Length: 381
Ligand SMILES: *Cc1c(COP(=O)(O)O)cnc(C)c1O
Image (cartoon, rainbow, N blue to C red; front, side, top):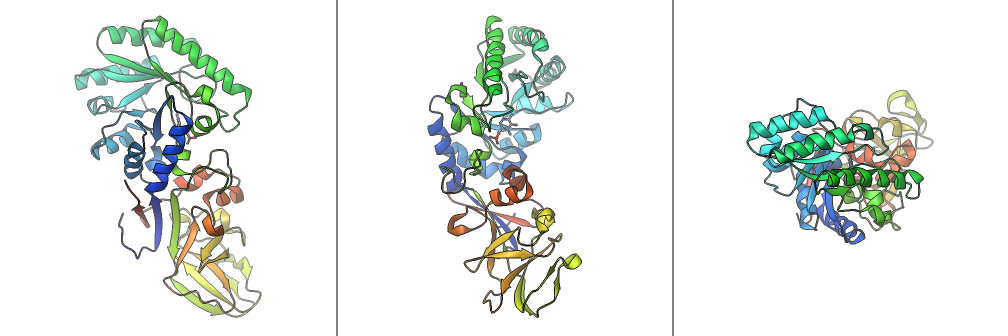
């Protein structure tokens, strides 16, 4: 990670946009705390700077997938409440407890392992008990809930843990009126009530980005937005209709410009042939940097270069792509092309790539990585 102005391939991370988005999410959920989800290195944006900006804009919690991700935030000096939620029973729970990381638990086996870690750390673990309300992924099945709560309540009585929350995750949050949302909420509340009946007083949380923006009745005590923090609209509203601002701009500098005659094949396999004499610009970004090779059908991918939207032609290679700038172009070596960004001025967006590839923008953003992509952080942290 360097911050020179001469990066070949650069992911520019706009922390002012993070702050704006967290403000939008907080305003959408006035009765709840905001847990900004910064797993997978902040969805490919950089967990530490995004976490700091999110906390600065009113988030009070952070959420990650793994203990390693949690410890990275602690090592950076971030002290906010922090939940880690996907573990193996032999993970390093002692380090997590010692670093004041809240841990999600979905089974008695995991609970026993976390309690052993807490004993080793010499302090109580902070638990979020996860109930599977219908996603059938992580979380305890309903049939095991009473036993899990019972074990946890005994451990609370012994001073081995605190039960901070009961929580779950939605299957159809991007379809706000899908009937499973209500069913999942009812099941979560039943599981939460069972914990209360056992003498615990946990918080409750369920909503991801989409539910934060569309289902106020599911906000409970904490909302857990991820993708919306990064300005990618969970409801796929186009730029201009979304209240969110995309945080990442992926750009690359032109390495070479050349004139080629009509009839020349371009890039591996010659999937594109120049129809006329034209100017080609070479960008040093390819699939090793997060430009999906499946974008290689001609014209599927446009870049913003010299104020114009221009097509990438021929195959996406590991390290590079070729842009057809048209006859008589004044594009020069060293110019900067936007591969995707906020979409202002008609520029390409991560959503455009996702649409072309029949995937979701989550996969596009998290795919930008690798030792060659310089991450440049701008805005107030
Ligand atoms: C990733 C994740 C989130 C955030 O989801 P978004 O759709 O990105 O808002 C929330 N909760 C859990 C458990 C997650 O894994």
